[in-house]
Structure formats: C-alpha cells, structure tokens
Length: 382
Image 1: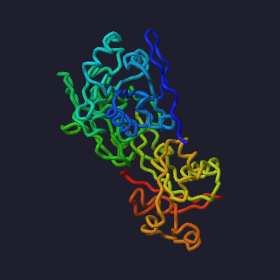
Image 2: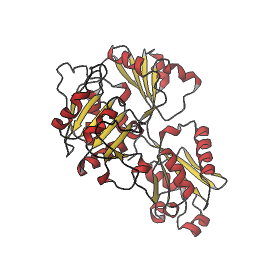
Image 3: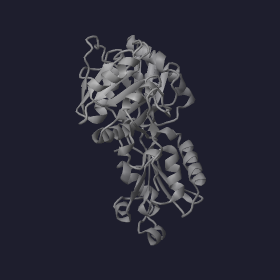
Image 4: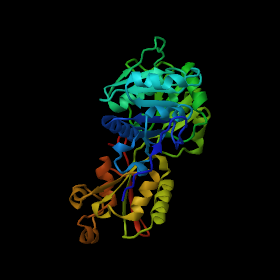
C-alpha cells in the first residue's frame, strides 16, 4: 500500500531540511504545476528532485522520492538556492523574482533559475543563463514538455552542446562526472569534438542551426578514434572494450535507456535471485545496467514481490502484458507447458519484443534457476 511521506513544515526564520539527490529541483504549487513537475521527473530521472504542496499528494510520493511541503513556498527557497545547480519553478515569473531577490549573491554562484507557466506553454530562462546553465536547462525542459523556450540574453549565440545536460530529457545518464568540465571546455573553445552514438534517441540537437563544424558525429568508437578528437561524448549501452577506452581520455560516457528485460519467474522467487540473474546476464552481454529502461512480463506477475522489489531498487517500471498480447508476438520457441499454466506460449521473449518492437533480441531466452530472461535493445523506447 502506498504511503504519503511526511511533509516539510515551512516556518519563518528557519531553513528547512531537504533531501538532495539530483542536480536540479522542480517546485510546483498548483494542481497543473504538479502534473508538469511529475512529467519532468519522469523525463529527467534521478537528476531532478521534485517539491510540491502536500495537499496535492497522490500517494506515490515516497516511492518516487518526491518531497512534499506545507506553508509558504517562499520559505523553501533558502534551502534550495545553495543546494542545486538549477531550479525549475512552475510559479508565476513575478512571484519567483520576489522570492529569490533576497537570496541573490553573484552570477558566479547563483543557480540557474527557470520559470514555467501553469499550462506548460513557455519555459523562461530567468537567472544565471550562461554561467549557471539556465539557458541550456530552459531548452532541455522546453524540449521535454513540448513547450516554447524563452531566452532573452543577447549574447546567447554559441548554440552548442551543454555537456552536463546532454540527453537528460531522454533519461540519459553518465557513467562518471569526472570529465564533464574539461569536455565542456573543449566544446565551448571549439576544439575537435566527437559525438559517438551507438544507441539512443537521435534528436538531441536542440538548435535551429547546423551542428558546429568542430563537432562531428560517428556511429562507432573506432571511427572516432581514427580522427583523433580532442574530446568526445559517447552514447552507448555497451560496456567499452579495452581498445576503446582511449576515447574517454577526455570524454564523457552516456547511457541511454534502451534495454528491455523480459523476465518470467516461478512464484515466490526472491529479489536476490532475480537481481543476480539480471546482473550476470548483462555482464555476459557486455551491456550496462544503467541502460535498462524497463522490466516486462505477463500480467500474472504484476504482484510478484521479487520482481517488484528489483524494479523499485533501480527505479524501473514493471510493464505487464496479457497472455493475448504476448501471443500476438512471434517467438522462436513456443512452449505448450508455459501455455498450460499462463495462457501464453512464452513470457520473457514476447514481452521484450512487445515493449521494444524489436524483431531480433540480443538474448532470445536464458533459463537460470527460477528465472527466465530475454534481453531486447531498441534505439527508441516509448
């Protein structure tokens, strides 16, 4: 049963305690704003913390890591301001200006501030557009919501890649933040930069101008290495091989969410066993756990506690299909035995295919103890 977390009590003269886990915070105080905030959390994943008023609680806030508050939102900002790189405020522009005015220090220190109107039509860069990253954050948020980005700084003419936000609206994550700063410097200083993309959404370029000539795209790492770039952004679900690692000498490795795990298991299978099978299987395939998008199975398993626990621990959705939906998918090895107990001729294989639309799977089916697993990789997952 879902539980509502305790709300932060906002009081005059006291800085509230918050739980920071991401680089950005989204704040909402209206019903429509809450819906937008939840959409942004789904798009930006673990990089974004969400705060909204407790009266709009849905009951799943604890599970999703959303923090509720009671009292004037103005009293929340003294805690948020020093904690985050950027704040996304689904509040009127005038109100935000008045609330943050007493907190402003210096453009080198202040976080990027972005405002969204209550209908989600306009995303406005308000403060620290360049150094604080608000302009790029505005573009990423607008792209995630299908809104219009409003950027007013006259000097905002570079139109290039924001390395720390690259692919964030698709849920891409990076393996390590160690090289974010030097790679960003290479991008803005117009050094030779390679963007290597093996999987993931291709529409990451946000601008209405061509890609700058110093940034070149490649379909594989070996081709990029042959051109000896000075920096690289690598987008792949694979674990890199030793001969490919030089690309990360001044590079950032991004993990797109493109892997679907089809899983079937015996009733009562432990989370520990399922977790071990998942990790061992991905290791054998040389795939990254960070690129898993979802776990897919039959609707008979929608209450399977071991599966649910694994999904909760990683933040993966458990996607369930009816036997009829699974039987619509062509599979290599239909089983009369599985059909007898479930009504479907297979579970893991057709579930992975159904979710991704993939015709061929990276792993058709593997039985390990109480678990059967299939693995699908798709360039785009919806």
